[in-house]
Length: 564
Image (cartoon, rainbow, N blue to C red):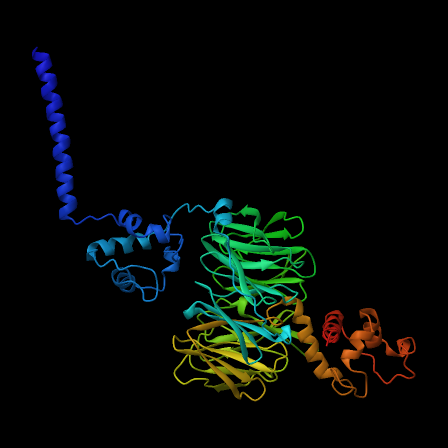
């Protein structure tokens, strides 16, 4: 009996201790104001923003999407809602509860899941009415991202043909090479498909939670999406937007770029010393080891080299695409922003220029002989440098209201002020180079259309943070040799030939319709032996000692007049 009493007493004391401990813990939680931000988020936010903060009917709330928003700004949004959105006010939550929600939002989300079923279920087909955009020349179509308004514009020359809304649009739009479609990626993983033939947004799909870039196979069959969350590459059937392959990877992809000369695409990692080549016919991925990670890179206009920079931006390296052997190395301070590089031809040489992040200069490099030509102080930390064969200048932004014009002949500088005290950023050109498009990078900003040669302003369209602009010709590497060809034409052919009118020699439009590529090359390099075979009575054309790249460029330029 005594043993039973002792046992019951022991249980009673144990239970009492546990109860006291629980009670004391509860009091401490209340006194310390410990509120579970995760539970509050799941209760009030997850229905629209997702259990993983991935975004469903509302935007994602992962830390990388909130970098530009202060805690104060987020607090105000939660408390008072956002105008013209479906988000309700949560004014019944107290200050501490909102602060704990914000802490939870700032916390990295581990092991985010997004699989094939999620991708398929995200697909949405639009039922918009067709409209005729009345495009005269696809070469002069330019897309504009108005980021502050979540909107995309379609322009031809100085006119706006259409505008449509697309939430969280950032940049990186991609055309199909037939000029009939383009694709709009967002940072939160959505890809929209717009038909230029039908004049409407057709459909969209969500590839992942955090998307890096999109690319197309050169035959137009597949659309590639590189993803940072989860880390993978999603391959879609371009026409249906159905996933056909998901390749999981280990690393932060820098970007994937397609080749036009063969069925291949290439991507690298910002944090891993490796590179993948993708067969865009078979969709096989092959991994290669590098000595260092490639943070940012571009593929040269003739698709022979990869020009990249290592992770901390201390050097510039050139790799042979076929062998991946290093061809050139140069130490350089300030990470080259190679995605924003621009290219041109002059006096038998090919060049590129790049800005450098957090440095007040751009650098000029000679390609194929691979050497640094010039470092040019532009007076501030810029982000883009652009040019076109119809301009004598590099058009550079420097983080201020100034447009810096660098003369391609002697690298002298002059500055213009598109809008006083408003930041200018990024110039794009129409395909023919007649028009220049400038962004005034402000909430109450502008999209300016200038004549390239005179700098005369033609149009001023009000815009809310206009950023990237994407011309059909200037944003497709396959057309870069054609642009070089325009420069060669102006240097070597202008005196005897015209593009479309009869001059001393036949117009390029006539040559393009009448001659095949072999005949063009033969007449350029050895006219004394080919003029009779081509039906000419005599020859007045000199032989040009062009190298292979110059020949391709001038022939591509001539061929561009075939349908004109």
